[in-house]
Image (tube, rainbow, N blue to C red; front, side, top):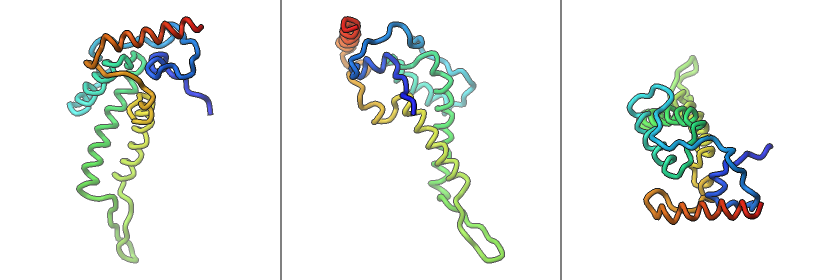
Length: 164
């Protein structure tokens, strides 16, 4: 399996554990303003979009290249929530009847819920939403010592350039 390329910004946040020189200006442009979704979204999808993009923008991890995948993620997340509510109300199996009598089958909603859950997990790993993918990140979030954090990031970047 091929090794996944880690964005430079993420390598800096993780403290550049490989201690290899960091490339200069090869990552896509980081979004600096409130980003609008590239596709039409309903109110629930838009609420999720606003919440997630705010968090990603605050740590500088949302790039122009990410917005399409993030929009798909928000749409799938709302669908996952709808299916979760359905399963909570109706359960994971439904009963059918044939010539031999009633029998249970896994509901189509449950199958979709499992499928979408798997797809969401893959996207979450890409964006660093899961605890495991986020575990190597260092430093505070927005509002927790921003000046010290910026100083830390630039010092790590300067150190890696000196080692190059």
